[in-house]
Length: 208
View: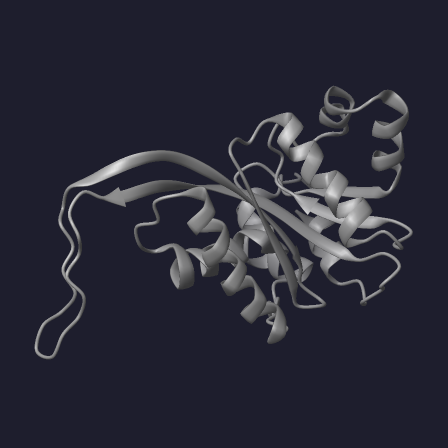
């Protein structure tokens, strides 16, 4: 925990950007009957029946100090999907960065080993060498600022029925463009000193 909190104290450095990565899923749901739009004196109406169209995975790539985010929609959340997301992060989003300071939760797919499963050894090492990885502790994924951004995405964009990956991609793209234009950031205030006071019970006790 303290490792991540110390990373968050670093000043902005475009050559070593701080990037938070997290993922979630979205159930794709279609209407069985047409909905009734809002009208004077009447709220919008939706039939309780719906049709399941599968599940899409969302990777949130968030640079909190720059107010930039990129959401990648995939069919699955396998090791190879994560590895491809990292490749895009390194080669397309931050090609000129010396190293990318990457904060993630400790999901078993979020390791350099996943890069070696997806790419040839030389390519996997090239990508791994561009990353400085930091992991949130078990039950501490709330320390990943990308999780906060996913919560905002859910409330502002995804809290309704979306029937296809294509529609999901369009809706997220519009949301992402607006957030990036506004350079929306997270005002992070939780520090190591706060953790030692508020989360004292999580630290081992030392008998004197």
